Image 1 (spheres, rainbow, N blue to C red):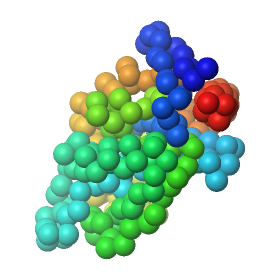
Image 2 (image 1 turned 180 degrees about the vertical axis):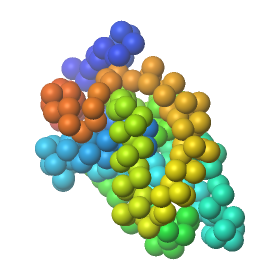
Image 3 (image 1 turned 90 degrees about the vertical axis):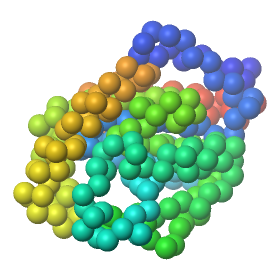
Image 4 (image 1 turned 120 degrees about the vertical axis):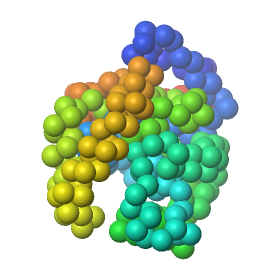
Length: 229
C-alpha cells in the first residue's frame, strides 16, 4: 500500500510513493495548438473542479516590464530561457505538498505579468500544461504522469492562427512570421524531442476521448491510493 507502479511509453516501470504525496502532478506537453488545453480542461471537467487545478506554463513567462514594449515583441517566447522555470518548480513543489501559491497572471497583449497574482491550492490533482514541460528535467522529475499531445503540425498552425488573431489581437503576417522564425524551430529543437519522456502519447489532441478516458482512469486509481494511504 502506498507505492503505485506505472509502465510508461518507453516501456520502463515508474514507482510513485503515494505515502509521501498530497497531490498528483500530471505534465502535459505538445506543440502550440496541439490541443493541450482542451485535454486538460476535459480532465478538469470530468474529475471535478474542487480536486483539480490547471497550471499553464505560459503564466510563468519572465516579467518583461523593465523592457520597452517594442523590445518585448522581439523575445523568442518559445525558447526555455523565456520562462521563469525556477519559480514554476518552486510552486509545483508547494502544490504537490498541499500548500497554497501566489500564481502569476500574464498579459499577452503587453508581453508582461500583471501586478496582481491569484491564490491557488490546495488541490489533489495538478495538471501542468505547456510546450516545454517535458523538456525541462527539473520539472519532469516532479511529474507522476507525463503526457504528450501529438497533433499534425498543419493543424497546430491553423489553430494557432485562429487563437492569436481572435483572442490576442494579432495580425496574420505577425503570427506567420513568428511561426517561421521561432515557433517551428523551437518545436523541432525542444518540444518534439521531449515526446520520448512521455508515459502516454495522445494523438489528435482533445478529440481522442478513448485516450482521455484511459488517463482519467489512471488518475482516479492514484487518487484512491492516496486517500487510502
